Length: 173
Image 1 (cartoon, rainbow, N blue to C red):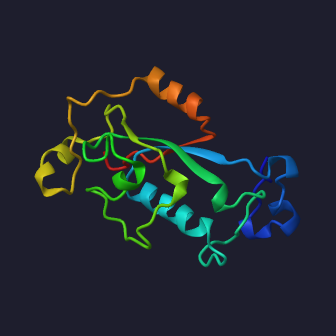
Image 2: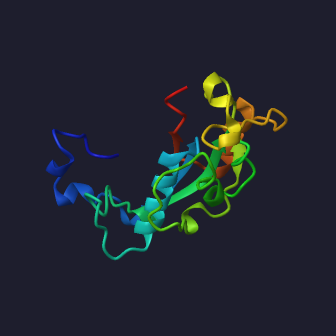
Image 3: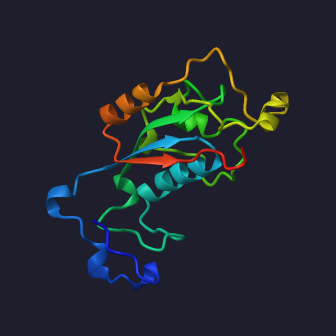
């Protein structure tokens, strides 16, 4: 649907950037997140900030393909940290070990109703990350919390109608 990228995003003309048809003008982009860490926090906070803003300093384009930040809705989230699992997404995004700079501290309606589910630990948490959970700088994995199975994750994605699944798994594990 989106135009093929050339050398630079800035090469798109205004016509190409406003492609969303009238029939889809009320459609939302439903996003699910795997990994509720610093990057997820910054994204959700940014979407919240720009959703109601008249001015959008910092964004290259206010609209891409006819979609704006106000068209993004977070519909599901997974994490393995016990301090995030079972919490509303907005609360989980500010829980340790997250330490991303806070711009507004407000998360707005784009993530309302989303409760963070327990993802599968697999190899997503390196052994060193489990050694000092008392410091709050590493993951706290509670083995008594049941993990969602692959089938359960697929069911949630189908039920929420997620269009996009963002993979924010840790890169340092």
